[in-house]
Amino acid sequence: MTRTILLAGTMLAGLASVAQADTLRLLTWGGYAPEDVVAKFEEETGHTVEVTKSNNEEMIAKLRATGGGGFDLAQPSQDRIMGPQMEFGIYKPIDVSKLNKELFIPSMLDATMGNTTVNGDVYGVPHVWGTSGLVMNTAEAGDTVKDYTDLCAPEVAGKVSYRLKRPTLIGFAFAMGEDPFAAYGDEAKYAEIMGKVEEKLIECKENVKTYWGGGDELMNLLRSGEVTASMAWDTGGWKLNDDNADLTFVAPASGALGWIDTFVLPAKGQADDVAYEWINFVMQPEVAAMITAAAGNFTASAGADEFAEDSLKAKYQASFPQEAIDNIKWYPPVPAGLETIEGEVLDRIQAAN
Amino acid sequence: MRSQSRITFYLLLTPLVLWLGLLIIIPHIDMLLISLRERISFGVYETSLAQYEKALTEPLYLRTFWRTAVMSVLATALTLMIAFPVSYYIAKMAKGRLQQVLFLLCLIPFYVSELVRTFGWMILLRETGLVSNLLQWVGLADRPIELLYTDATMMVGLVYTSMLFMVVPLVTTLESLDDSVIEAGYDLGGSGLSVLREIIIPHAMPGIVSGCIVVFMLSLGNYLTPTMLGGKDSLWFTEMIYNQFIVRSNWELGAAFGFMLLVLSSVIVWGMLWLTGRTLKETMG
View (cartoon, rainbow over the protein chains, first blue to last red):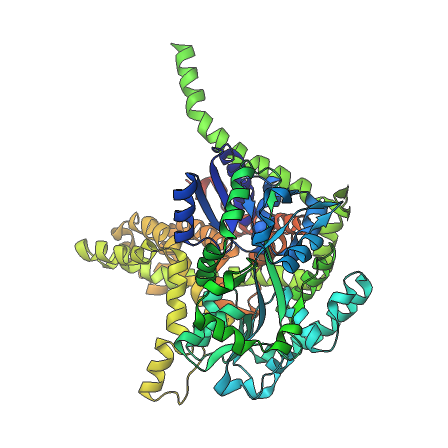
C-alpha cells in the first residue's frame, strides 16, 4: 500500500545515501539530462552521473521524506523553492561564486535568484524554461478555442482534456479575468478566486473527455484525434507538430503561463563540487543546445539560441509572436498554505458529478 | 545442544522480526504519529485530532471512502461469481492435460505487469480502439464509441486483475472434494442446486473466504486500475492518499486517510469471517 511503500522507500533512500563522493545523483525531469550530455560530462570529468526522472511534486516529496538526502542536485521549478525551504528546510544555499555567471542570461538569473532567496541566502539558479498554454488541432478547434475558458464551449464538448493540477486553476483564473498571482499574499482573496474557478471547472466537467496525467497519455489522445484541444506544455505541441501540421501550441489570449526549472542543492547532498561542475558544464551554449534538442525547451544559457535547431526556432516563433511573449505570466513563488486551498478545490472538482 | 537449537531458532526468527519491525510496525507507528498532528505554521506542529475530524466531516472524503468500500465489495462478489464456475470446471470436469492447460491460461495474463494489462484494456476500449472499430464494422454503431472512463470499465478492470487470486484457492479446495461425495448426494435424491448448496459450497468455504479476503484487499488497495480506466470520475481512496502525500504535500491528512483505510479493511475482513462463522485460523490453514 502507498503509505508502506513511501516509508519503506524513505528508509532505503537513507541507507543508499552512503555513496561515493564523485557520483552525482541528479533528480531531474525527463529530457534534462540526455544520454549524450551525460556521456560527455563523464568523459571530460571522470565523474559518474545517476539520473532519476521525476516531477515537481515527487521531487519535493522525495526530498521531504529524506530531509533533503539521497540526491546531490535537483531541479524543481523556481516557484516551488521558497515555500518548501521555509517549511521543511530541504535545500542548502547555493554559492553563486562557484558558478560561471557569464553562461546565464542575466535577467533570468537575477529573477530566479530573487524568487528563491530565503533569509538572504540564494537557493536556486535557472536552467530550462518554457510555458504552458493550449495544444490543439487548429483545423478542428482553432476557431473556437482562443483561451482556457473556451475549452468549456459546446462546440468542443467531449473533445477536450486538461490536467487536474494547479496550472489549470491558475490558467482558468487568468482567463476569467482574475489575477491569482496578485492574490498570493491574501489567502481570503485567493480562496475567493479559487471558488469561482471551482464553479467553472465543475460546470466544464461535462466537456472533458478525461483529465490527463502524463505527457505521453496526452500525446496519444491528441494524436488519435480523440481530443482536439487541451491545456498542455509548449513542447508537447511542437513535438506533435512534426507528425501532424494541424497540431500545435497556441498561446492563450489571457497569456501563457511561464515556468523556470532550476538547479537546487538538496540539504544532505554529498557532492556539491560535482554539482557545481555539472551546472557549469550544462550551461555551456553547445551543451545547452543538446538539452534543448532533447527536452524541446530553451535554456537560460546565454548564446545557446545560435546552436538550436532552426525548425524548433520556427515553431517557437509561430506560437509566440512578440505580444504573446510580453503577455507570459511568470509563476511567482507559491506561499505555503495556498496549496491546501488548491488541493481541496481540486478534490471537489474531481468528485463532482 | 540446547543452546545451539536456541541460536538456530533466533537466527531463523531474525529475518521475520526485521521485516515486520522495520517495514511494517515502525512505519505504521510513525504514520500514526504524523496523522495525529496539525500544522500551525512553518515547521510548527501540534498534537490534535484535526486530521480525523476533517476526514470524517468533509462529505467528499467520506463519499470517496464509502464508494471505494462498496465498489470493492461489489468487485469481490463479481469475481467470486465468475471465478466459481471456472474453478469448478477446472477442478472437477476437466481431466489430465486439459486441466493443466486451463489452469495455465488463467495464469498467463499475470506474466506481464499490472500496468501492461491495464494498458491492454485501454487499447481495446478507447474511442479509436479495437472494440469501438469492431462495433462500427459490424454495423452495431454508426460512430466511434468511448468505452473508457466509466465505473463499469473500472469494474471490469478490477475483476480481471483479481481473477487469479480467486481461482487458485477455489481450485485447491474443490480438488480436495471427493467426487464420490457429490455422486452420493445425487444418489440420495439431491438436485443439482441442493448438491451445490449442501455439499460443494460448504466444502469450498475456506477457499471462498480466503479468495474473497485477498480479492477485497487487492481491490481496496488498487491504485492503477481505478486511475487509468476510471478516468475523470474515478476517485478511489488510494488515489486520495497518493494525492495528499505527493501532490498536496499534506502528509498529516494522508496518514489519517491511510489509517482509515486500514481500519476499514480490518473491519470488513473481520465482518466477512464473522458472517461465514469462520475464524482466521481455519481460513488461513
